[in-house]
Image 1 (cartoon, rainbow, N blue to C red):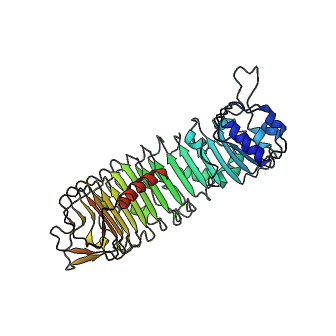
Image 2: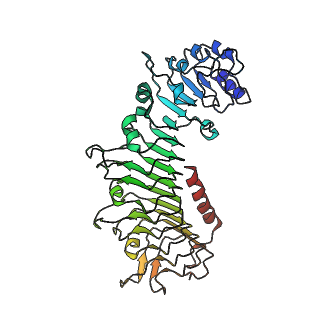
Image 3: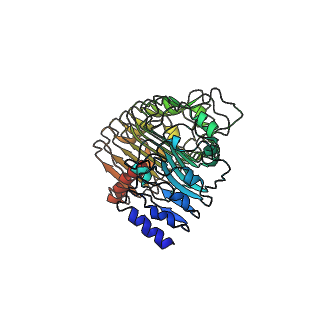
Length: 453
């Protein structure tokens, strides 16, 4: 049986446009895979005959469930009810062009979709359709809000979804409305991609019950190309909200102006490990510190930051930063932050005791990596730093202080890459690998990998 199914999937990927009706005769079939094929017609009463089907992968061009077949003399494509009637089905991967294709009610059918990858979208996307079957176990992609989806779909799909992605959606005003209506308590991965014209504040908690935490299971948040987004959080988030978030990626959200993460949000991100921030035209700060007690313990698990093309960034912190805030930071990559003049104040730099990899590229106004200090310290110590790269920094003179009176000690430094820094005074020891090509390649790969996430 498995051999036949493999051959079937291969045949379909070679140009078959209509699912053969004869497949309906394979009543013992347990797995049918049409993913990646160019099938855009599925005759009615074919899928419904596969009574023993356990796995169905239909991420192909077909998504107009129940539609009339052109030149078909009254024939229609398969209705989604045919999938509902597969009582043994436990894995489903399917494309649906419109939520109206879904039945309003499924009667007494009991569905047990242990794993699913369901896309409801007006636009066919080869990126989504041709992806491998090795997906997170419960994935939903929408171009609309959850409000309006049938109750049975919310019970079977959205409430159990682990990964939710909104693409080019309409009507999304406040993600908390989606959280409440879709019962997204178990959601681990949330992405918002493309135009959401009414979304100015991602999370508006001004009228939310302060005793009810939100997105308490979320581990990854991806915000891409949200041109109307002005801030991530409005109001105070309840304690326990976003408490498991590990990765935050924000890219090309051009109306975000002030700090990406204000204090009211920072204090909830107790498990944040990674920040990727890319192509922000107006954002001036990464972190806000207004009305923040400098004794507050924040970002204790933050281990990696990649900041690229933040053209108006003038400082990582808006004001004084808690001294030990980057105590666990291991990787910091900064590129094309054209207004940035100094990367860290001296007291914050002293907390970088775990930093292993630091790269700074194409920041034309950066004069020093660390701000000068009035202290009597003659050295600043980076006990774990192994890789350091400084590339295309035309104003950089010294790593720390204006005249080089304060040195840096990096006892574990293995690789140093310095290029197109005409004013920089390099005082590295001869034991350090200088301008290694593999080191340079790893920097390029770092940015490439980030865009794939």
